[in-house]
Structure formats: structure tokens, C-alpha cells
Image (cartoon, rainbow, N blue to C red; front, side, top):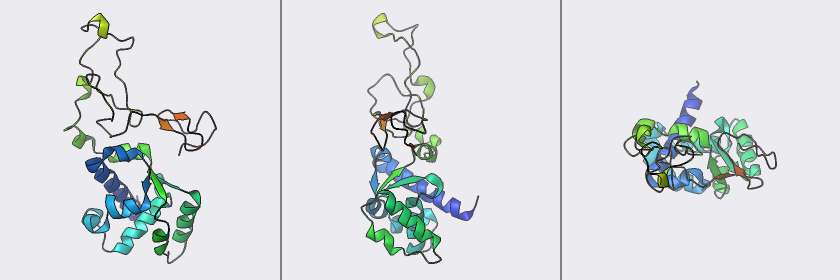
Amino acid sequence: MTDETTDLERFFRQIVLNLAATDPARLHRTLSLMDLRDAIVPYRANRRALQLESSEEYELLLMRLCAGEGGFARTEPENVRSLFAAELQSTNPDLGTIHLHESAEVSLQPELLARALDPKAEMAFAPPEHLANPVTQENSPPSRRRRDDKAPQCTHCGSLLPTYRLVKFCPHCGGGRSPSRCFSCENEIESGWRYCVSCGAAVW
């Protein structure tokens, strides 16, 4: 693993942790590049955690993320992503390009997002999996029995969800219960799919 990869992984993880601490629902929504830079992971407030020495290093990491390096994020429109990737090929990338495309939208890759969340830290907020479904087929009244005694799973990270309360967001990764949608045709996408069954578009 190179230092560059380590820096980018650290940057991605900081974005995830900052969102998880302030607004977990946004983890699975598109984020504007400007919001990423100015509000979610601003340089001055995160430079120590990111182990960066200058704002130029920070903006280079942001450009690499938005160019799709490492598969951590997806940037739209596609021509903006391609522009960032082209800049990174030059010996002296024009970091001002970031400021010209602040309205570009960035989506975090779901599987890598789930890995970035520290499961040990989540234990303080989420019940253990063996307590996620305290009412079983054997000891529950007929009116509460289900055909399948397996607890529902999060469509984003696969963790078991509590069945003893209304669950709108996963307590393990913060993902919403609403189904994921294909970027191309808006067809529902199930967890683990790489291609849409409706239009054939790559999910990531």
C-alpha cells in the first residue's frame, strides 16, 4: 500500500466519520463538492486528523477523490470527473479547477463507506446482534409470529436490524431503509448487485 493510497483512504474515512457524527442520513445521499470542502470536512478543522501540511495537499486529495481514484466516490456530471482525472495526469494540476466546479455532486461508494465505519465505535449505539430479535417464533404469541424468524438486514452493510422498534436508519452504518436506485433508470437495486437488472447499467 502506497502513501498516496493511505492518504486517500484517510481522507475518505474522515468524510464518513464526520457525516456519521453529524447527519448519518446524508451518508447515502449525493453531496456537493462545495459542501464537502467547506462544511463536511473543511481543511482547517481536519488538517491534523488528515495529517496534511498545506491546503494544496488537501485540495489535491479532494480532486483525487472526485476523479474516482480508488473507487471511493462517484462524481457527476461525468465530464467533471473526467476533467479532474485529466488534471491529475499533468505534472502541475490546476487546483483552481475544483473551485470552478463546486456544484458537482459526489456519492460515496456504499461498500467502502460501511467498511470505513468503526464497528467497535458503533457498539455503543447499536444493540448486539443476538439481541436484535428478542422475540422468536417459539416464545412469541401467534399474532406476532412471522413466517421467517430471521431478522431483517440492512441493504447497505448487511447487518441485522432491530425488530422491536420502528427502524428508519441502520444503527450500524447509518443507511436509510429506503431501497437504493439505479443512477440510470431509477430501478430498485439490491445489496451486492454490480449491474442493474432493468437497464444493465453498472451500479458503480
